[in-house]
Length: 80
Length: 408
Image (cartoon, rainbow over all chains, first blue to last red; front, side, top):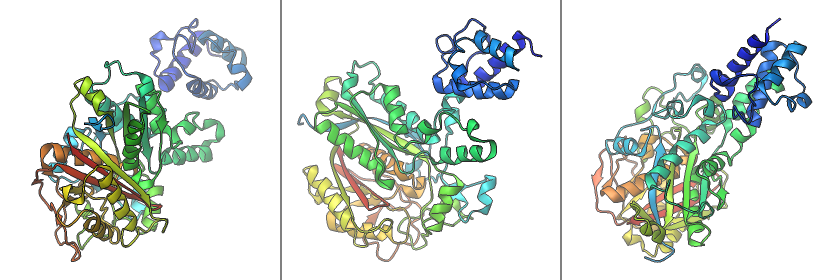
C-alpha cells in the first residue's frame, strides 16, 4: 500500500516524462492545467501511465474530476 | 519595383548536409555527399540500405518533451521555419499576425508516426496509442505547427504534390502576397520517412538506387551509371515578403521570387511525360510570369533525381523551354532526394547561387549520358554571374512546378 507521498512522487516521475514538469514543482495543491501546464492530450498520457504504474483503472468520466495532483493521489489511494 | 513584387528575406534549413543553411551551402559548394549506409537493424533485409539522413538530429535542437508531440517531419519543419523567421528579423518587427500566412507541405507526411503507433496498437492495445497520434500524422501538421508557433493568422496552407510540394509551397506563397492576402508568408517543405516501409515501397517500384556498397556515389544525376534516387530527409523554409514591406523595414533581401509556373501532366501516376511536355509548360509559364525570356535564365537547379528515365526527359524540357545556354546542376547528387522538401531546399540553393555568383556542383557525373547536351557544373562549383535562375520540381502524379528567382 503506497503512501500519499509515494503516490505523489510516482506522479511526479510520470509528469516529468510526459510533460517535462520539474518534479520539484509537483505538490498536492497544484492544478495539472493551471499550475503545471499539462495540456489535455498530455493529461491522457498521464492517466494511462498512472494506471499502469499504480494498477488502477481511472475511468474517462473520472478524469475531469482530477483537477489537482491531490485529487489524483486521493483517487489512486482509494482504488489501488 | 512594383507593389506586388515578392522578395526572399529569410532562409532556414536542416538537411543531410548540415543543420542550417550556412553549413548546407558550404557542403554543397565543396561537393560533399550527405548519403550514407543505413546501419539500423531493420535495414538488413531491404534491397536499399543507403539514405541521406539529417546531419543534425532534431533531438539535438528541440527538447525531448516537445518531440513527443511532433512527428519528425513536423519537428524539422519547425526548426527550419524558426531559422528562417530569425534570419528575416521579423520577430520584433510589429508584423500584424493577420498579414502573416504559412504555406508548408510534405510529400508523404507523418508516415513514421502512423507505423510506429500501429506497432504499439498491435503490441499493447488501443489505450497505449498516443493521444498525439492524429496531430502528428495529419498532412497539415507541419504547416499548422509553424503557423501556431509564429502566430500566423492570415491562413495556414498545406499542399501535397509529392516531390513538387516544396516548390508548390513557394508558388502559393507568391500568389498569397500578389493577391493581397498576406504581406509575409513562411513557405517550405519537409520530409522525414527514412523507415523500412516507405523505402520498401519505393524500392519495389525500382525507383531507388541499390548502390549499397558505395553510398556517396549512389546519387548520380545524368550519369550513365545512375540507377535510381537516394532517399533523403530534411526541411527547408523561406520567408517571402512583399517587396515594399521588406524595404520599409530595411530588411536584407536575398533575391526576388519573380515567377512561378504550375502544370499537371494528365498522363501517368508515376511516369513523367517522356517529352517533358508538362514540365515545358511549367517552365514557360514561370519565365513569362517573371516577365523574362528563356535567354535571361543563366542557371537551372534541375529536378534530376538520378533515375534512368526522368533525368533525360527534363533535359529535353529545359532545352525547349529555356534554351541551350543555361548552366545546370542537380544538388540532389549531394543531398539525396528530399521528396516534399526538395523544392524548398533547392530554392535555397538557387537563391544562394544568385547571391554568391556560383553554381553548386553535380557530383558523381563521371560518365555523362550520351543524350546530355546541356552544360552541367560537374564535380566542382562554377563561378557564374546569375541575374535570373530557375528551380524545377516534378512529382509523382504528374505535378510540375517551376520557379524563377532573380537578383535582388
